[in-house]
Length: 280
Image (tube, rainbow, N blue to C red; front, side):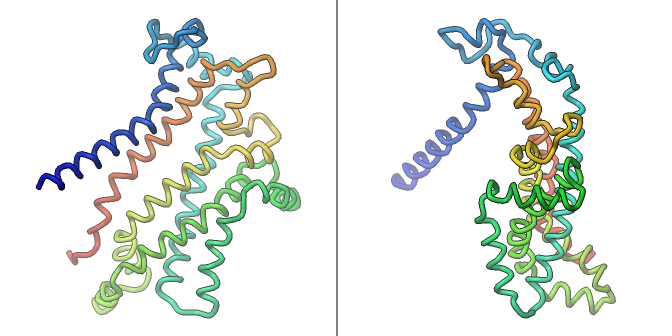
């Protein structure tokens, strides 16, 4: 029992160490967001602000640097992220179902291509995508930017959901068909609830990707009123210096929707594991 207990203690200690190392930058970001400039640039930094202030948050929310309200960029980012999650999730689930349930020519080739596509650096695709969006008259458009993010989220979502769909016993679908359920009803009443945990995982990935992405948004969006939050964050970096208070305040506000989205969808993870498996 002693070696097992020592092993458990070592694993718990390692887990706590990893958590501290991962969470410390986030803690410092939030702490700096509430610090006045005197404490931010102090030669003896303190982990907790002695005189907390909301000045930096007020500066960011009222558009003090770019003249445009924070909520305008927030709506743009929300439209792009939600559109990416919904469309990529639906298409990825349909593609994963087709790959897992049907046998067709070049099926293995298709799966290999899903992996190959994810190996291509995003920076190498900026110019080709820029030309394509310009030809389609989707440059400087939230629809065009959303389409780009959907294209990057689809391979990962399809590959991940394929495993979840393949893990669902085919006998459940056969039993539903015997009871008179059609393909559409079987898909929504049997397959979809059981694949919900994988759909949640892919939606989190898609949301974070679309919410935090900068390179494509900075390249494709010309008008300031169509910019997203990561672009707004660049306004606080200047040649004369960086305004670290507003930078940390904007980064904190940028992180909150991701946390909220995760808290909302993670409740469906466990419930989706067994939902639909028992006939009611």
